[in-house]
Image 1 (cartoon, rainbow, N blue to C red):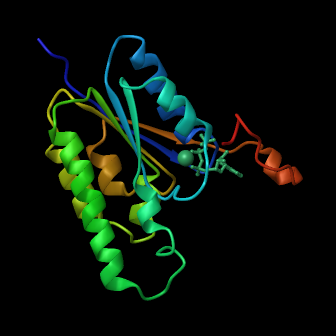
Image 2: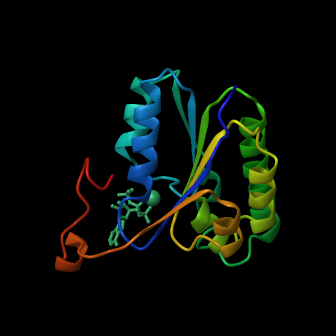
Length: 177
Ligand code: ATP
Ligand code: MG
């Protein structure tokens, strides 16, 4: 019997949401599981996980959808272009989710994408509701919508107690990116 897949959300202001999702991926690779991480928002930035994921291929696959949103986020009136990219992003997610090729799919920073109005909450709800029963799905980003929290099985809110950023310290390679 296959185990029931979980819908997991890492949200909140504190640091550790993407790190937690990557931790799941690292753990799961150990059991020959197949993971796909789809990154929203993180368009032109560079993160260590983009390099390490290559070392874990083909078990761990990483896709940067956020690139498509670059220029859209700050731009005030690119409505048509925006909608086109959003539709494309949802289509890619849907294809990956329905493919049956993965055990775990991580939608990194998707909560921010919803919150910024880049993608529709309804589309995300549909993605989750239509997922194969055994697939685990992880959503990260602060400001997770109540409707998503409602249908999730596991929700963790990262709480900020202290962050070096408060002392003016810059983001650190390998820790923050
Ligand atoms: P991480 O990727 O380190 O797990 P995160 O996913 O919880 O962080 P995001 O909201 O995605 O946090 O923020 C992305 C970037 O901002 C990362 O470089 C992260 O280290 C940094 N960051 C996260 N939380 C805070 C915070 N409370 N104050 C300042 N910087 C933060
Ligand atoms: Mg993050």
